[in-house]
Image (tube, rainbow, N blue to C red):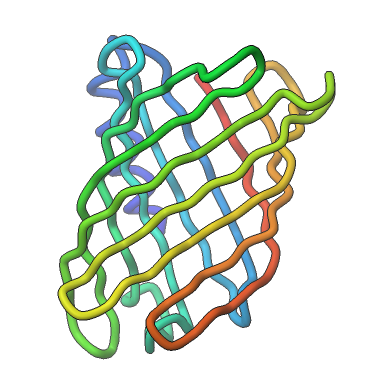
Length: 178
């Protein structure tokens, strides 16, 4: 995990001149514990690129150690729908490794954030991964709580839907903006 974090950090530092760097670390529990690390940077106004690394133990026969993972690259745009409500649709592609083998997938989704109160934002997210013979739909909802100027905490309802399984749970995510 340290190697992946360092690679993501230095890759994003190479494009940091264009804008801010966003780092997210997430842990969620949907019958098993899953972890992910995301790094993104602005490359143009209202356009970001993001790299997402996830350890998905227990889902779709993904079990065991750090050898079972998903690595996704995404392009994200930001759209203000109305005062206080923003959305970030994204599209990308990725690679997954499990005990069943390796697979490429297409990725699309959307994140919503609504400024609910002065101390909390309401968030909803959906991420659909399409494989040649299956799909995985990750969806989350909850609250984003700003902690300090450059950091916030997400408290999440977390869920995943596959061809034959629906797992629900909870999670948390730390967000940093540099």
